[in-house]
Length: 465
Image 1 (cartoon, rainbow, N blue to C red):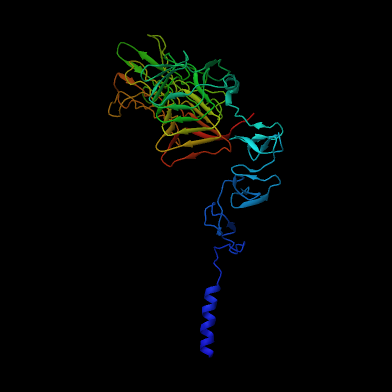
Image 2 (cartoon, helix red, strand yellow; image 1 turned 180 degrees about the horizontal axis):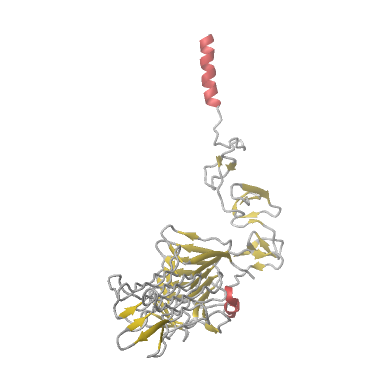
């Protein structure tokens, strides 16, 4: 009997041992699995204990007249009883009959019976005292233009096209003109003029942004009531011409009956300095100086990269160097998604100029703003500096080009000729790095591991009004 009793005890104990993941009794005893997923909609099975991982302060579900909401630290849920009931997708209602309120980040309107009739989603939250959705406040004072066009058209350049910021025109790859409301904003001190287009949903494929001139021109801004999707390559090459102290200085050309000597020009600057051009030979005529960094990390005012130096000569008119990369601002009330490329790299210096080699232009500016910013796939935001002009190291009468700045590396100076040829030219200095600014609801964005971010990159919080 003794052995039989022990066997029964073991069997009975095995059948009644509690399941540590079950909360059928309403409790979770394991500290690693602290929350009971009653309905099985939060990542588990019905009545299963789970370890929550959620976005802080977001609504999760209704449980009868209670709401389940992620806590402030994103590692658990708070369950709160609702006095007026819980509405799926909203949470606790704070809406009396014939009232409009800000409830859980949405503007909610109730009818005379107290039933919810209108729910307006507010990506940036809402003002409880008014009540209304918080509205995006685009950088560089562009909110007024968004307000001036309450019902803009969509802008679909998914098949490619051209945007001219000087003329304010947009055409598809098939040369079909698109009528999109546009405004020209004068240049502020230290910034570029801005060509603003106002649209609803925007899709950009392979798009060339031009300014109609060899140097400079208005920067591009697109402000959208809907989403902005960049699916192709958007090249913005309308950069600044010259800016005191920021542009590279000229190389010097000297010529006699027996010699022709030219030092390299300096590279333009933006977020970082441009590099100096190379001398005609060690200890001889020095190259032009690189420009010095200017502008702000916020890209307010909006501006592109500065131009490189050109040539100063006693036998020919002075020439300008190549231009810097352009500037673009894309602001959406909803989402900016980039799966393609936005390219504002500085122009490379020339390699055929009979006088001094130009330096490289500085990288331009890219400003993206939306409640959510998503950078996907193998796309990229490119604001690198242009390389200076120059020759290969095998040419003894010609200095090597200076490399333009990349993310993590500074611009490099132009090289000096290594030989004693009567015709010697120093290489042009590389251009400085441009800026990338991303403003979102919480100063964060998502980016795939294969997405290229080549510029001086800073995050910021999206302004609201």
